[in-house]
Image (cartoon, rainbow, N blue to C red):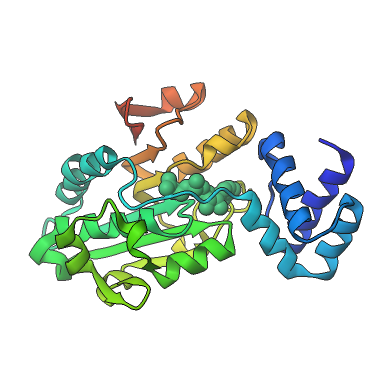
Length: 278
Ligand SMILES: C[S@@+](CC[C@H](N)C(=O)[O-])C[C@H]1O[C@@H](n2cnc3c(N)ncnc32)[C@H](O)[C@@H]1O
């Protein structure tokens, strides 16, 4: 990577704590150039100076680099399997022996604009049916892009972004308002959002989640943008964050690396569902 491009990344790291140095360099280069064109700056060194003078420009650049394509119940079969197999197994295993209910912890890592985590919250709410009040459900949603997180947290989507959402689900979990549909407050209370960089070496789980490990981690369509060695680091972090027998779900074009093949059990190779064995 050109030295002046490295300076751009160093500025993002110093000013925003976001390390994109492992991002695929062709994607990175293209997106920095696109952002510079929008900002009407032709010279990379001048653009680096702008980043230092205007921290909001760092957020705009992060947003430009991070690819945020997402949708509700993206790859519906994966969500179908999550509801039928993974959540029912988690609910069965986590049920308290001596009292009703139990604890469940879920992490949507790289949640982008929130469609994934709201889909998970809906499935979990449906799976717990009438017993919801007996269960302590904690769903964490993280992303490195603060703009995407803000949209996720607001939880308002125009109708065309809800094409995979069935009518009954729309009525039960959203309120129609001008310009779109808003997630209902009872669902909103199930999810905590925070900025988190999966490459961070300081911690293995999002800071908000305190020390916990997770029964289910969705990390879909995030690793694909990174080089092999950065993926290796992310995999170790994700594995450490899994509870014993916890599930990891990756994107359709993502697979485990060799190290993780031996450390995680493959539940469904085609749909990229894995489980921590110990
Ligand atoms: C293509 S979206 C995937 C959204 C969702 N998981 C899905 O599959 O629909 C990728 C998201 O990963 C986020 N991301 C990229 N690198 C990240 C990192 N190092 N740590 C946390 N999030 C990251 C991006 O900001 C973006 O929102």
